[in-house]
Image 1 (cartoon, helix red, strand yellow):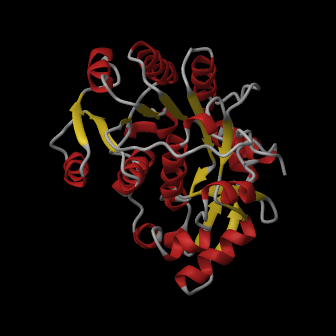
Image 2: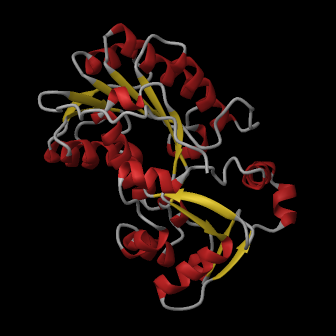
Image 3: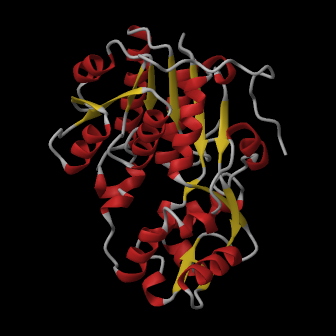
Length: 320
């Protein structure tokens, strides 16, 4: 296992009292998990939201998040929201999310770069950017991954204290419709004996909150994060235990992967290891504390999502 790129000396945790972090994507999965973790750690949290009156925005406000109205396409609104904050958590909607957000790869890059540029302009002390484990120097050929590599490169070139995390696939996304659970089966990209890493979004929040607490320890670092590693057979076993009856696992048929270039390229990225993940989970646990296994997630925060996936073919809002 590779060592994590942290400063070897332990840093004194930063006192969050009176300090605010601007969280992008706070009405979504990652941003919401980060906002909750920061609040629990004593940080002030501000969020840029398009509709302050939406149910999700109201829930954030009720939890103590300061809302600022704006849009990623409006740099002036980002500037107003960012004024006076200590830190920024940056994550953008992706073209890989399809019709949910409808952004292009070019828009994602522009949004991510604009946030970083404004952080420099406004004197932000620490920016944490959430990328993807497939990002890196070698292009993937998938725009919604390569866009994140471009944002990473832009951030590193700036005079800005920053940390880049590359999450593995979300456990929450394993509960998307179309995988066959409602029919007693499960289909995905892993071969039965092939290992892929996953992470619960609440652990992205937990790790990010600690990163903000020790900026000098994590400044300039880029590293993958994951909480568990599972095989296709392991998925079958875990899901069967969770539901109490057999769930049969299979990889997407090769004919489909050849016919559908999008799915086929994703499968290739699992096969070459980039999407399967290379996080040092043992070192992450030592650094950040216990992280959720897939089994524990199914029994806890994922239980409701599992039930939804078993009973409907419609995408639950919780996954958006």
